[in-house]
Length: 148
Image (cartoon, rainbow, N blue to C red; front, side, top):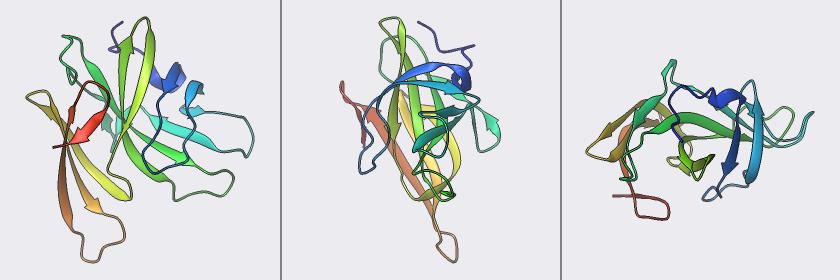
């Protein structure tokens, strides 16, 4: 299943566990970028754009098909405006969309790129004065994305 052309903000995505977060997991239906229970309950917010730009596409797991890299946040409920923002990699596996959270947590994203099958995230430490730029590189190890 190709992720190109899929409206991820209005799709059903099987979300994997998020490291260090209490984010929703399992099959989540997203409507207008919000997934999870309606109302003020905990939910996930995703954007098919990262830092106001389009989603990034490239083969990250070596299967010859592109993954989509988007921005996501886990929100605790009403009034949660400072969620743990992360990068989300969505792949098409066995006829369904699967979302895997990739760090960094508590950093403000700036740029995402795929180079040589690796995901490079350029960001800034959240709340740092002055801003501290940080680059993180991740690779697929067959089970999850690990920092390399």
